[in-house]
Image (cartoon, rainbow, N blue to C red; front, side, top):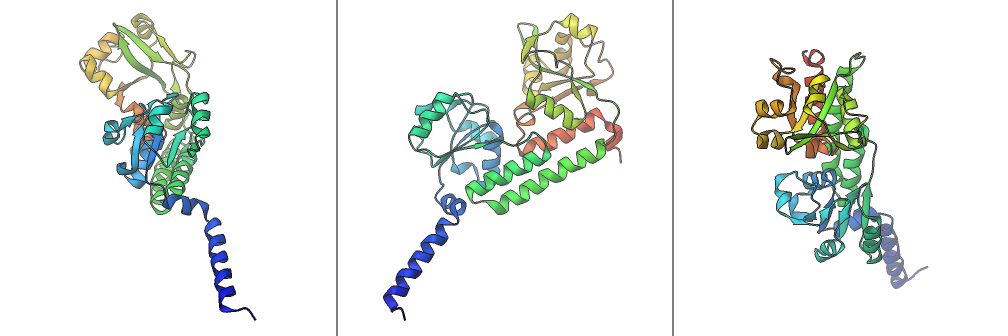
Length: 291
């Protein structure tokens, strides 16, 4: 028969093994300082754990607005190693575009825990991403609720668009620099967003970003123009924006063909993207959302 001391020792060992069997929860309890890279990751962390746990973000992170006041670690693809380490994070959570590779390896060599979040660009992927980040933070309950809301929205969009035969052409205008429109070309996030909303990329044969003349736009106008609300406002409003694109006549009487939105979240595939994709789908296919 084992003595009391032996039983105590075995109890301690069993307890220690039990803790090791729950690595995500155990580690999550110690996560107090998070650095985020990627608009989607930042929004998810803020929604699940609050902005207070975030010590720094990359320059693509704009939502919620409070994160823009936090320390910057640079552009997502060109992060600052020194800037990140100076924030003394417990973890760096980033999306698939984190870079450059040399900087990531340098950070790993310091022992900093880095979690790269990469999921398919669809409704299921958005929900899975939320749950994954929730597990990292020990916020599974909150993540389950948020993922459920996102999934319900995307399922509703897919149901309403089932069987559509037309796919409106959408032209993304990033800016008007010196009077010349800068069009967004073929990009995975952009094309995936359009597909989920029931549209196609009008500039799909363009490489990333390319200047496009007013004459070209007027000759073959897209069915819809998509632009960031801030860009339209800074240009002087919708009427001036369309005039500078050479589309005043083509869009006359159809102001709904200019879609103003927050592109930093629409193309991020974060939580807010679901409702924005739903809004875009409603604009492209109003008949499918009338009931």
